[in-house]
View (cartoon, rainbow, N blue to C red):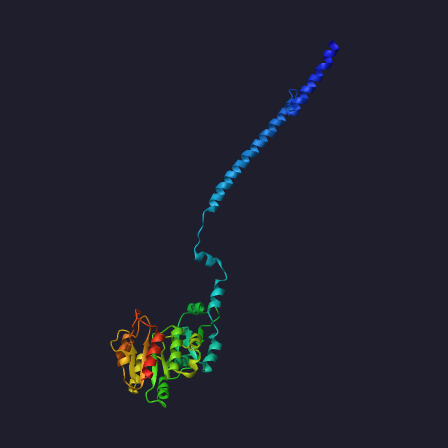
Length: 335
């Protein structure tokens, strides 16, 4: 009996161990070292979980910071962009510009048509340029004495050597020559004078209308007026090749000279009570067109023999300068 009991005891223990092992239970006979390893493994897993939670919280906090919009001004972006100067240079057309002492001197000596000159005071008073620049200034070419930095701004840092010029698309003639030309084979010529029209598109449109209505010439002041640039020639659509232009130093003195030669000075103004449709004078005439915002200046109005208005029937209170010039020339030449 004792032997049978000894044989059955381990079998019961084995069956009990197997049953427990199937359900993942550890038997009570596990050593202490195995329990220590289990404790260390569980503690490491817990630490990893804690680290993951901390990283998750930190990531959420940092991402919330990154989600805040950061607005930067356009100047900050422009300062960081090194190609801004190249873009500005490409926008300006330098085809009719010349700079540098030797290049400008050759252009002045060759009698080319010049619209405008910028130079430093040293260049203007030098022996090489003084006589040429003074003669051009008396003929109506706009000459400005500016600083070296201003020239660098105009040319975007080019090697200008203190002098820059802009060519004109057509040559101008003196006022005396324009008067003689207008009276040749025409008893009552009409000239057009521009007062304060600085937009080259308006100047080009006026030149186109003037040539279409057989106007004999255009008078442009040296200052406060757009010159005969490439934009003017493009808008004029070829009319500048068939129309004489005189650029005068002082428009006020030019009108006095025209009066001495028998010309009537007629100004256009929306405030005048005399309608152009009721005007019937027949004589050599110079018609003055002022700017859209200011109109004819007060000094020029005092020189006018007549101030005419274009009657408007709609709610619009004024007309574009080129449109007003076209309507007035049509009205005056159709009588």
